[in-house]
Every structure is written in C-alpha cells, then in structure tokens.
Image (cartoon, rainbow, N blue to C red; front, side, top):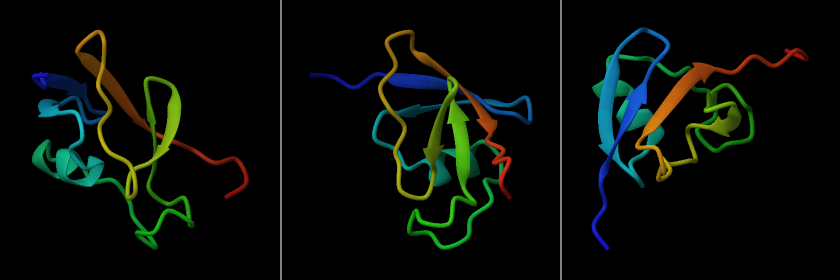
Length: 81
C-alpha cells in the first residue's frame, strides 16, 4: 500500500507536507514551527498539540494518515497548568 503525503496546516500560518508515520517534532521543525517540549517521554504534557481537535503528545506520537489528506494543528492549552 502506497503512503501518500498529508498536508499539515500549522498555527504559524505555514503549510507543510509529510507522510503518515513521520514524527510530529520533525514535521514541525521542517515547517518552521516550534512545539514546546519538556520530558520527551510523554508524561509532562508540554508538547501537547491539537490535531483536528484531538489532543496529541507530539514527543511520542507520529503524523496519522488522513482520509481528507489534510490536518490542522493548534497548540493545546491545559486549563490546569
């Protein structure tokens, strides 16, 4: 099965493209967008982003496949921080 590139729309206004399975931090860096990081193990939540409205910890997650071929990213905000 061929993997097609997904278009990613970043909060900084940039749009980039990468394949499903790409690390979020690598995809963000290629787009010139900085995702804050802390522990890099997924437990601190500093790297949380919202991908099409779903919260993801970018340091331990990868870009998912998208049926529409497009994803929208926003920085997540935790009301308890």
